Length: 254
Image (tube, rainbow, N blue to C red; front, side, top):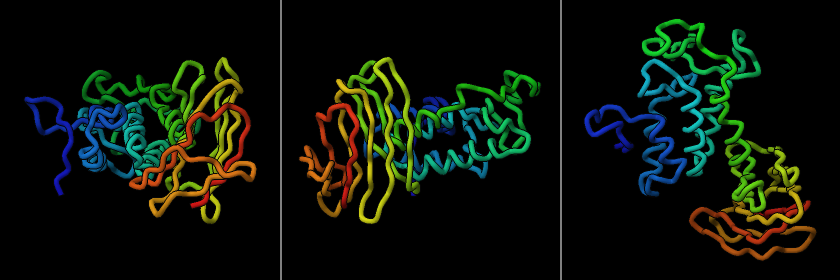
């Protein structure tokens, strides 16, 4: 199988960069017919402790891996995103020589706590940060995509709730903006799932709910069935628009 992806330049066609291809997925720049091919190509860089960076050889760069995690999630490759998080962030956070709380700027593919060994830091590993904010992409990715709570206008006056399950069975999270606290949670149940949210009154949102390609699901809230604005039989997702903020619990039956 040929795995097609963007190359680094029109001069060097041997390098298919992790950052550029990840961002092509994340920003929706790649056509839908090429998205899975790019995702497949990114997987060829993976090792047991993370994604080796083709544009910075021998290095694993969590800042760029964060882009890749979001890229896979943006096209619905949830299992791949969760797998990469476990390989890299899971490896470092469980490493007895790590901080067990913050995250490293970068490390080498053999597991050494170095970064940019052959350029920039010139093998002086004391420059490598172990509390690097740019390496914390999964915090945003898990909230916006796996929990599925996304803001689409300033402070969250408009929002989307579009969870992705992967191999998880329960997720809960939230954040605060000047409008107040936004929180949501979902849990799988036999034949469907529960989803609930508590979002500031006066806001408006859209639910994009995973369901099944086998047919339109039933979506109920407070014992009443909700009208579904759109059902995509190719993905199984249903959309319910014009949802007001407040505290609501929903059951989706496949």
